[in-house]
Amino acid sequence: MEKKKIYIFDTTLRDGEQSPGASMSSEDKLVFAKQLSHLGVDIIEAGFPVSSPIQFEGVKIISEEVRGVTIAALARAVENDIKVAYDAIKNAEKKRIHTFIATSPIHMEYKLKKKPDEVLKMAVNAVRYAKSLLDDVEFSAEDATRSDINFLKEVFLAVVEAGATTVNIPDTVGYTTPFEFYNLVKSIKEVIGDRAIISVHCHNDLGLAVANSLSALLAGAEQVEVSVNGIGERAGNASLEEVVMSINVRNDIYPFYTNINTKEIYKTSKLLVSITGLPLAYNKPIVGRNVFAHESGIHQDGVIKHKQTYEIMKPEDVGRSSSEIILGRHSGRHALKVKFKELGITYSSDEEFEEMYKKFLEIADKKKNVYEEDLLTIFSQNIDDSKSVYNLQSVQIISGDKLLPTSTVVLKKGNREYVESAIGNGPVDATFKAIDKIVGIKGIKLDDFSVHAVTSGKDAIGEVNLSIHSDNMSFSGHGTDTDIIVASAKAYLNAINKVLYYRNSQVNLP
Ligand code: KIV
Ligand code: ZN
Image 1 (cartoon, rainbow, N blue to C red):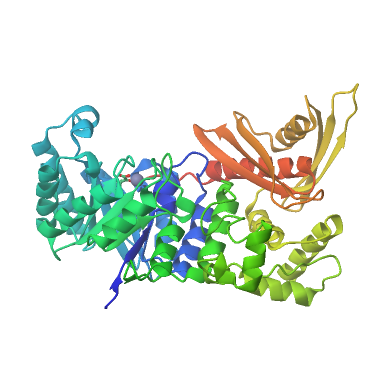
Image 2: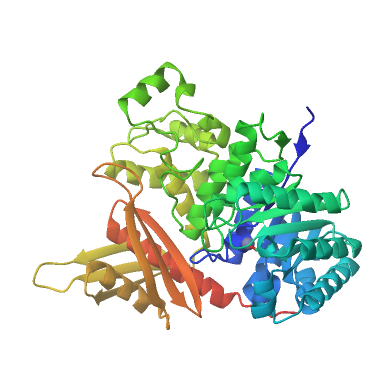
């Protein structure tokens, strides 16, 4: 049977970035967009340019620097949004405007305060205007799954007539179910035929986003909108890795293929975690820490005899290594290079490798065994450090049961070192206060703070994720170390650096 190509439209940088705690700097977005293009996605939705100057800048930089993949920008169905979206993507090699308007009674009446015929007119005008600027136009009927089916068909027919090349059916509030969605997509496909690509965009409020997306593909959809690690509004979007691996593993049921190089999946997932600081559940399908680990005796016994007794896919297929090569303080540069190669960790010069090797030895000195996740941590730290305004040099705490703790922090900016001490209600509080004194930043508030161990054992690496509120936005920070105070300082500084980056990189809308 001939396999059908499914277009992977990645919205990690748009819908994903809209989720709390996931805001990224333009530089981070560019790094991630480059990785998405290695992964092999067909379309990168890079952002919503009219929504803020930083969004505009992110989309523009990606459009200018990432080649070989279509760059899409989101715009409401109004002329100014579309014009700004076009300005942001105009230098892309391949570009798409993605315009949308809601079609459900509840959205039209309460949110838009418009009658259906006005919405229909706005949709058509938006597509016509976008089409006057470029060829590749996608139209989305927001809240399609709670819309009147006849109205939905009328809108889709009209926008295709106006030039839309893709029509997207979003399950905006994650309300539909696989069987119902199959029927909806099939009846839209019957009306549209091959005049436009049918796309779907599913949210995960009931945990059905992946199942609904796969049903839609069986019903004739050819594009699926997904995000890495499933991040997105509320419960998130359909996860890229789950949709792609379902197609690959159950190709007997889903006779499709995608352009995704599945061996890049794990690296992409890790990169997103290191940029956003949003941790993954240990049991997150495909990319979670435990999904290829076997704990019970019966399972271990089965896997040793034949892997497929308890594994339906090979960890190597998603870029994970099945064997736990255990590195320690006696490992040399060669072993580390081999492991880096296996994990896809790259470095641009011998000096950069030396720096990473030094970091590896520091961890190996404190831990008996250094695992792959430790190495990926060292790698992500390495990325972060090079982009930071301030880098952490050291933290020293004095505390006791009768004294308030004092923290002394040394930060480096360029070639200069800055030292400050502060007293706080606890060692973490004192450390954050000392950092505040050096950076001299005003108007920030700590919103969220969580600690967990990313590796096992008494010498586990602690991971701190936090978010700070500043400039009416939330900035996440992520830090890891065997010392939890140092991990907290790194996480706090990571978030502060993002605020500084944001404040320095305001651009004016055209
Ligand atoms: O969920 C949704 O409806 C969206 C649209 C903008 C496609 O994200
Ligand atoms: Zn969405």
